[in-house]
Amino acid sequence: MKLAILGGLSACCLIAGAAAAQAPVVEKVDPPNWWAGHTVNPVRLLIRGRNLAGARMECPRLACGAVKVSAAGTYAFVDVTVPTGRAAGSYPLTLRTAAGSAPVPFAVSAPLPPNGRFQGFGPNDVMYLIMPDRFANGDTSNDEPAVSRGILDRSKPRRWHGGDLAGIRQRLPYLKELGVTAIWMNPIYDNTNELDRREIADNEPTTAYHGYHARDYYAVDERFGDVAAFRQLVDEAHRHGIKIIADMVANHTGAYHPWVTDSPTPTWYNGTAEQHLANTWQTWTLADPYGTPAERRETLDGWFINILPDLNQNDPEVSRYIIQNTLWWIGVSGMDGIRQDTWPYVPRTFWRDWMTAIKRQYPGVRVVGEVLDGDPTMVAFFEGGRPQFDGIDDKVDALFDFPLFFALRGAFAQGQPIRQVAHMLSRDRLYRNPSSLVTLIGLHDVGRFMGERGATPEGLKLAFTFLLTTRGTPLIYYGDEIGLPGGGDPDNRRDFPGGWPADPRNAFEPSGRSAAEQDVWAHVQKLTRLRAQRADLRGASTENLHVGEQSWVYRRGRSVVALNNGTSPAEVRLPAMELAGDALGLCPAARRDSGGVTLTIPARTGCIF
Ligand SMILES: [Ca+2]
Ligand SMILES: [Ca+2]
Ligand SMILES: [Ca+2]
Image (cartoon, rainbow, N blue to C red; front, side, top):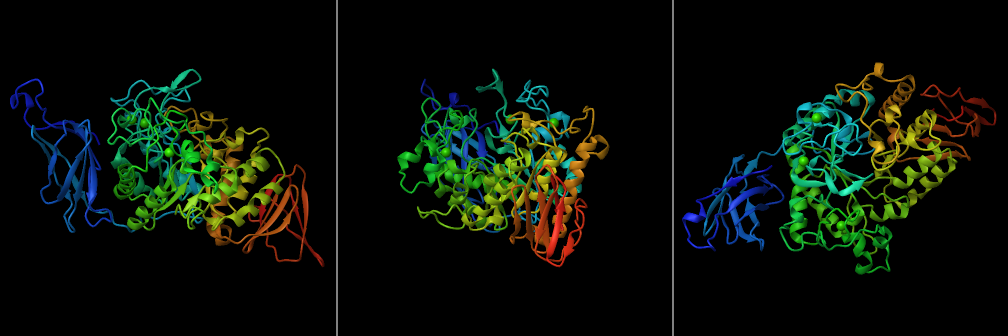
């Protein structure tokens, strides 16, 4: 939301002299609206403008507190109380100084009916990650918006490509057909509008097509759509039985955020563009019982990649701004969950407060945090639901299972022993609730599964068989369901074939897929359907029946999963048990004799009995 409102009489005519006070100008109001009966009341507005020194507010039919103005007179904080039962509608406020006045647009909104909204996510879901710029271009009219021209180029992997919210909405039937029940999208905040000359890659300035360089936390990037389009996507996804999980970034803003050159408070960021620490990613220090605040400072306060301005959540105004902003996105859209970026680099006291505020207003909404670490002791350290040695409980609902991710890539892509996957799963003893983890074989920050040395479609299918039959909430990275190739960032973010009107083929349709792509796609669909049918496959109960170097048989309730990651058929001998046929149709029936059961698992194949 951007406003350019010149308020009051021109100051020149009121006061003579060179030092004449100028009339106040209001440019932006965060948040632009709030709700009656909300758990956050009063709501604190952050008003951006000019000549705000000495401001007081007039708030008809609402109540406003004292105004706090930044030293430069460019920001004003004010608490607005929305009395219980205030009807939805426009409630214009007035900011007044000795030199004049300016209107402050503000609205009270009707809360969205909670039924079918704010649903959370969990092991019953199949999550699907979409990079909005790279999935489908459903609206070519927003490809080159007026505020931001000349930075779209599909031939360049670090430029904008034109995908948007309309494209995702149009592909909901595709996702439903695949068996997806929850979409996580990379951030849709309004991002940097120009070529980023502070972040150079391959000798070229980059763009913020990925969404992680916010310049306005209260707007959707004009290339993706607007807040109404987001709400429309959430509503239509819900009609398809699909939940929406939005990506949020509380650790840092983009380098071009207006706060960087003029901050609302002197301690808004940790450091300044000229003088700041660099994040050295010494995440272990955060979990070090012998550490000191000084030891952790670089990791908590350092600027990400030494470029992204680090927000200071210990400044109560910053903390309050982020909390309100999160509640605002949930409230205006009816979305179901949040993926929070770079979890470790923010003080855990803030996460505790942030999580508490979310649950107070929206108890059903769930959050998954990003702790990109292969060490399960580090992921377990940040797990919510229990205080750590410092007495702090992050309270986060879920984390990504990166330790398992690395083991899966090693085994199923590179061909290392499958035993290491079982070995990693044994570390579940470290977690309070291993089933809360979000499991994955790929996402936007790592090279594609098929980009690994040694990766094959058979290995990919086997990895999916494991992913959809193990504990946790499985995540599919867009395009992995057709074995999309790609190396590291940005090659792992190729456009989905068929997402653009002029694409030579459309892989959203079976006719647009190669035989190999269709084979993987049909396999994934079969697995999502089996998982939907069999609660056991989504449950917490797992029992190893056999763990070999390259073969693994585990029981999940009444289902038995048999995996062979070797390059020749495996024969596995099990104690006598009842085993129905393989639901995937890939393994011969178990052979029974007086002493037990023998399974024959073809090379690089997984079966579900
Ligand atoms: Ca577009
Ligand atoms: Ca933008
Ligand atoms: Ca930080």
